[in-house]
Length: 200
Image 1: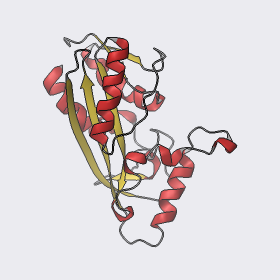
Image 2: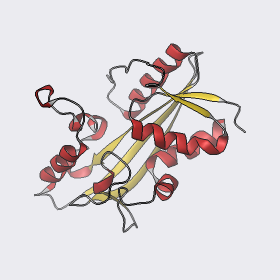
Image 3: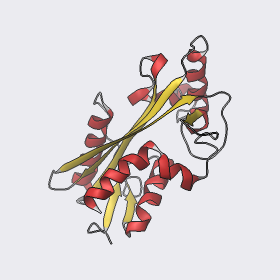
Image 4: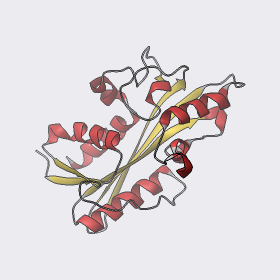
């Protein structure tokens, strides 16, 4: 049983919250999302995954008075000089003239379009996971999984860029993979292993 009984997942992204909840279930932790607590989403002004994870977790911990966990993650494509990187979610943002919101089908198309004339389609997912306490203490862990970009998108599981990411050694994209198998090997899972080892 974890010594932390309740934690805020500092995200309004339902897919991300669901994955983090699933990873914490075995430790008996009651998870609340930032959206459920009506916490504001801070502007991500840092230039690294680590910086943005720490910014979001600290804001949620201060606002809620509870330990808060934030994940800042994204797709890094080698031939695109690391893009979309920390701007992975922003690549999916639709113009306000089109109703706003996020459209990852559009973002995936954009990634593939930029790769059309590139031979190298290698990529990796990165996850920076930060546990912030109301006292101000922060603990940050990194996870990474290597792979490549495939086209067309495959699978309707997962979220974000999962349907175009094929991890090394796999035949199924993250979008096709059973969630439990993805949880066992994803960038988020690798960061979680370090978090669990130190705090749960």
